[in-house]
Image (cartoon, chains in turn orange, yellow):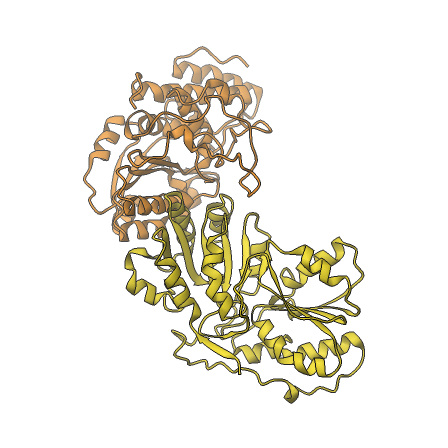
Length: 306
Length: 334
């Protein structure tokens, strides 16, 4: 499904929307929008072969957790289209990027902008950490590292079913510190899951700050290649590079695209807060106001009214 | 003489899974130890070797379930919840995946010590929302476990007995049921898993000594048949004894205590099992004796309960069935 807008334009709109949310709510996972906007725009606008959303554009309120008594329970997977033999399955692994995911769904027409006003509100399914029932999610990924294993399981099952569609995971580099990721790579390589691919937002950030200061994980591309997967490193803000990377042959191997990104891309003024970028909450009214003016300028919009 | 069945899980799983191609047999590098090696050899397309990587195995199983398959996970019980607890919750329990977790080596049924002995699994599993929890106590129950577990609309954890397993019952396990093994009015004795066989060793001498025992065997911890227990508890004169191959906290004993307190019943409860302690490596006979939940410990507990000596000596009990550690019915001497 090709949107009328170019992926580059969608990426800009994602940044604007997340920024607006951040200013209005005095805080957000803002740097994640800076680093991942091109990837998510490209995934939804071009790379993923998915059908139209099967869910209401304004999300239904929270309808209870899964239980034997809860017959109404639904995951948010329907925002990524129906689950069929031909279509791709998409797993959104870093649940902390949920706001960016919702913003993306809005910009590609799968979610109504009003949906974002339900963000982090009591009784809403549009949760701050993406839950299974949140738009665009199919599983809980708030515990980092389980996305790739799950996608590998799906891909294995789909191979057995001889399904045409691929299984894609959007990941972040912080979760590469989790041992489970490497277990998942082992298994995906061993079972030659070439219907599995991932794009990793390598922004080199984690909660405590820059990964190099918290727990440096070295040459990730070399490691993943050594595990036997096909690993390609690109500029994560260059959509052409993504298109090329996805075309790489990876017969009998999963494909992992490392998208090297900048956590303040498109909002250079944010650099002042580096390396504390995991969650941007303004320290003072003055900071909020000046960031509003400066970053709005960079994004080509009027300062946000709040 | 009690009938001993060789590897009941092996043929049970093979017969059941080979008829349902949506079932996948997952193994965490313990294929022969979990008696699915023959299945692997005969049905390689339904077998998925997961290696020693339990965290991945749990989430991977979740993914298989999301693509329409029914994973049966095979490994030792401890490895299904200690290391991959987070994955167990997020990938299996929360989304209510139809995944059947077959946990081998329940409690002290292994000489491999603390790292292999699942002594708190029932406690952990039964507090997890959406989880069904079952323990097999004999060969007949092992023979019914695959079908029963697979009928559950949601995830299931099963304690599986392997190797030489006695046949105590002639009717299949039915989830949610409780077996009444003996009627009586003085003491309500509730046992589960291997403790039922152990309790049966003491039963005839206790009856000879004039103790009237209502003996129940529990295989389903969740959903637990509270009504049936409540009904049977009411007319008990002296008190309740639970005996379990598990910590006395969180398992069968606690379950019964919860029912007694919930309904305000005035019944004394004695809980036999591992009393707030880890165990070490040894034989089943040695460990149940050492930690006080063998047949003789049961006699001693009843004496304490009634406040009178029963004049029963250990030699009066039916002979314990000694399992050969180096048996052909086990892949390794674990």
